[in-house]
Length: 348
Image (tube, rainbow, N blue to C red; front, side, top):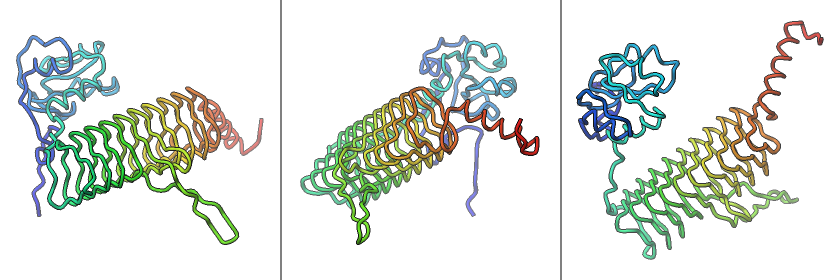
């Protein structure tokens, strides 16, 4: 049986290449804060409770202030109002947003692995496909006719890139992804098992049964989009399915045909978007929510977990429940039901 070893710090070296150690001043420079007066050397990252003098940690919420009081971390990323709570043995790195600073420090200690240009000998690439010389093509990858693979792309083992598909520069296509009928922008990440561009769920019922409707659109994915493992994105029937710049889609999400998602939306796992839904910019959707076809969700609206959205949602509105309704109305109904049950079901 294998021996399992753990350490207080994050980033197991078996899986995550590390840089460093880094001087405390270099860490401060990475997050754009004033360098502390003390001198220290830091080797990695850790949570407040587990950190030692060699680690950087951060306080993301005042609710964890008790952990801050007890931490042994060499340095802690904090907002101005919490700097006085940092123990004497730790250096306070005062930042505007500890979550952003934490990401910057993580990138300092654990930079993304470099692309190793080349094509694995087991890959199958069509003669007329255009693969940039700086791309990394993994084992058993299939790249179809007329496909275009941009500069510094990494295509993981067993991925299938269909005929005519375009990948912009710096895309990360993980293992066993399949892409067809799609054009991707720059810096798009598809996690393992994602399926993009397959036929949508379109058909007409006739006397002889179902007649499949031709799906003649494509999928267009903007720059800096991340799509989770085993998520599926159907191509459109008459129009394109579009995912806007910077959007994040979790694992196991279903995006129906001709859905149009705006910029910087966040969609949690197990969400289902029926055909021809439209999401404007900065929409957030909680896990297991479902949207009926042709629903329009306005900019910055928030759809709660397990909500069933049957009609349009106005910009900036937060909804819950099935059928979905504004949050205040939802909780007012819940409170009314509780009062009724406590009175034995008798209305006031």
